[in-house]
Amino acid sequence: MNPLPAEQLRETLSDPKLQLAIYDATGRLMQKRKTSIQPEVIDDFQQYRDQANRIKKHTIENLDYYLEQLERNLIARGGRVLWAADAEDAKRQILELARQKGVRKIVKSKSMTTEEIDLNESLEHAHIEVVETDLGEYIIQLAHERPYHIVAPALHKTRYQVADLFTEKLGVEREEVIEKQTMIARRVLREKFLAGEMGMTGANFLIADSGAVVVIENEGNARLSSSAPRIQVAVAGIEKLIPRAQDLATFLKVLGRSATGQPLTVYTSFLSGPRRPGEIDGPEEFYLVLIDNGRTRVLADKDKRQSLYCIRCGACLNHCPVYRKIGGHNYPWVYSGPIGAILSPQFHGVAKDPWLPYASSLCGACAEVCPVKIEIPKILLELRREVTEEKTRQGKTGFEKLAFRIWSWVMCRPSLYEFGASAGGALFGGATEWLKKSPLPIKVPPLENWLAHRDLPPPPPRSFRQLWRERQALRDRTGGAPGKDQLH
Image (tube, rainbow, N blue to C red; front, side):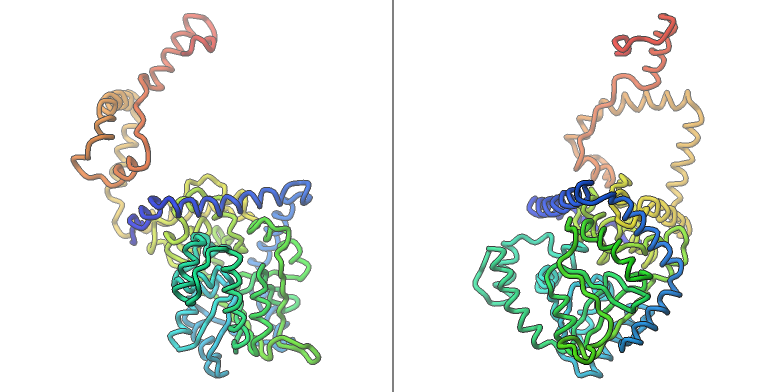
């Protein structure tokens, strides 16, 4: 089992600039969401969440039917569907298609699914140039990093870091003004769009009854990626389905508000096959790559299949106190925050990163803001149970079992518990200041870590049981409930 990345976490927590960048960015997104869902802005936002949850639940429970319907309708519009069982299968098929069509340059819009399967790296190894055209993704690509956030991949980068990056990678004069940095990227990417032979996008939604791929964005780069090159490839997980075009209205109401606080994102594109006769732009060929990559395994679990409802808005990340402290790169996979804490163990198995389900305070903020009402804390608890079962299977819970047996034995004997609590309080009280100022004689990492980030409070002068007995004695003397002034 892989340990928690302690050294990397310490670096993140001790970097004040990074901490400020994360808090500022997520804080702005939180506030924008809060403003955009006020009753005077949208009538009963919660009813749209309820409706989105019902649509997703129905779709996931009938996924096979809607996938077949999607395929039929897309083929009828001149497109082709490629089915991929896993990441390797998807990369192989896309690479074969690129080679078959003689493609050497690909322009891509933002796609978490292609990040999930490490598509760029595979294409680059085959000497095919791949350019991310979303500004944040382009910055991340130049930095050779993975996304820090589902919606804002370069959330952790300051404008000064971007200025240094552009100067180093693009050979331009150093520019710290954000608007001018955007224009630099725009000039470079315009040339890439014109030279691109294949355009590639992800998909926010797949509409079964019309065979359409819906791509939602704010920069217009996805629209260019899907219309300028002669070949268009959309890559999507099989869970992105919704049954009908009219269902999309519900998700448009909740997605923009949950992600960036916008009533509606700037561009909503419907891609449904190659260019038709008389149309002035659009691809000559259109392909949809549908990826499983562990999704059917999640689908088979009735208790946790609601994880597949996720529409990748990032709201749970913005509101999560753990994500806002440790950032996106401390999570082991491309999906970070609460949604990553439940998706990664289900896709890769709980044995790979057993600490992930515990990277949560279970405060419930993620479930409160999820636009499709995924019960993330409930799934985290279920995954914690699976982690414990895995540890038991591997024989790694002997000490824990012994500790809990001793705890149970003591808790069933009130007088022994009270004696232990009194003795422990007395010893602890004398050791508090010493523990704060002196190194531990025996290294105990959990205690050291705890003391590194928290004050050690002194024990109370009287225990709860002592206070309770005093209260009862006072009640007996006064013949009734004591007044508030008598309880202190």
